Length: 215
Image (cartoon, rainbow, N blue to C red; front, side):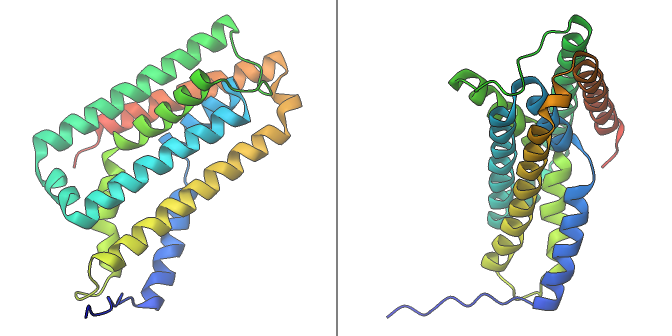
């Protein structure tokens, strides 16, 4: 007969971790900028798919941390640096695209239904912007374990990682819904172009900061 697996969690530490995770999620970063950019250019559906892409990446990085792969990546500096530079380049690429769209005033209608291609593009951008952000992996590998007891085990680590990913997804979906509610304002030409330009500049800024940061 098998023995039941016990998840050893210090619930006080877990509550403290949740407060930190909420603060981390609410700080505007690359995920925020990418979801806003997709919602502005492609509407609520594309923004939601973008948020789903971010969540998918969080799940993969959380799994990597649970099985120990995340720690190996963080310690292998050539791999870690390659991920960092790929993420910086991808954010800059997305930012330039948004800036060009703002200058040329070429956007999809924010309330237009997204086709499969637009949905895939939204998911891909959310996934790529998150999976190439090494700070997410560092959070799972270096910050998260500080709230665990030495005998916590992999299931407790998975619980903490899933909690962060769920908070991030909830926040990004709420952000998309809020942007959709004010779509009448967003469809105004000047507002749309200004938001796209500001979001594009923010993406380039996040990419530049990521490239210049030292691990």
